[in-house]
Length: 233
Image 1 (tube, rainbow, N blue to C red):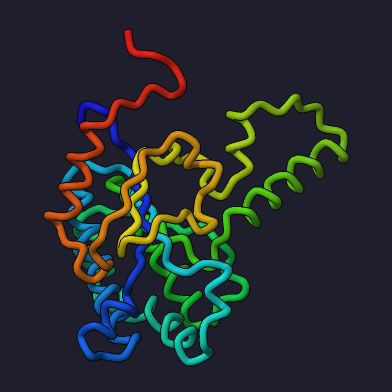
Image 2: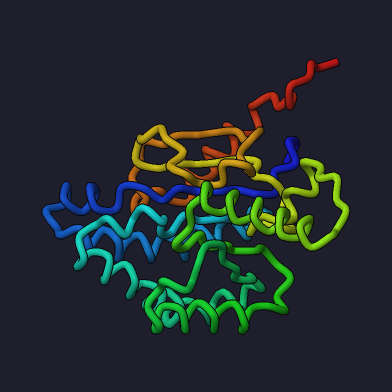
């Protein structure tokens, strides 16, 4: 791709609202959304995307009704039992950012198992942001740096080095952020990593955001002129 797209991030929004429009309960939308994770991940891998980061559950999502949160926490089992074998066949590596310590034990087990099973894969990195909040991530990174300095490590911190304290250490900054369902917010997602990302807010809800729509976003990205604060020659 002309603009060297390596890292796509998606805020998967609109599951519940989409389901209600179908006359279904919100959990039906979340279930269909899980099926779409598989579809878009496989397609992104085939399109040459190196990193795909999906906002699966934010630190603020705990505010949702207890029943809905409980269902959301059952989705890792559904997803990995259904699709982990295919991810292995496609050479996709699973990683995550966020905190697992508040996640129920069964969901934690499936994530840790998928990460372990796929750790030697060399294809696209499929990164789930689970119980993730970017402000928390930045604060924790600052604490880690401060602790090293307090312990006597000399370190004139650069912007590039600060990235190594973030949970996305080793991953490139996001080239393209897509948010589905028409909302135009970042919602505490990858604030540091999005500094020069191209942003696309797509009207389709996540369950109906298909391969063709993903390709349209890639095509729009290729039309963008990324100057990173400079000027074209």
